[in-house]
Length: 232
Image (cartoon, rainbow, N blue to C red):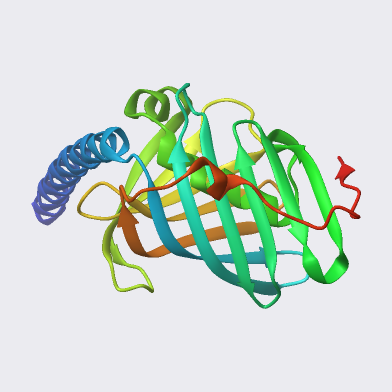
């Protein structure tokens, strides 16, 4: 009799657990759908963006962190996933990065160096473009290319209350996963990209100014004429 009662209580407990789990999953899916909807509305309404930007890079092999800070200007292009980005890094050293469609330019004043290349082969600070690409990704593209998971609500270091999402690529990609922190307006204010070797790049946007006037010249990097660009 006692064994029967124990089994009965166990069966009831398991039933309650799995029912609670199902309710939690349903609620999470509802939150996720609402977040993706807000992200799509934000993407369609975002014509320009000015913000402060920080980039934290973690080297998993060495266990080292590097933090770079500056300002960013962003504008979506006319074609799908086409965009224009200008980042002026200020700390710890000055460096300028511009992304126009599928190409990037980096100017390093202290080294007297200019590097020009394609964004799909970008390395180092040019990889900031990868994290920012989520600004211009539609809801359909996110669902088609990633398994999106709701991780909960979280406050980022800028003080913004956000919803935390995990994105796992459905196809072979240059990185194994990514994470997004999306504010109440559907704006991704933080993005983290995790490489296959566990190195990470985390981009944080703060003090956002949306839909202000931006000129095409804002995406042109000017450097001394005597510097010959290196193409990679």
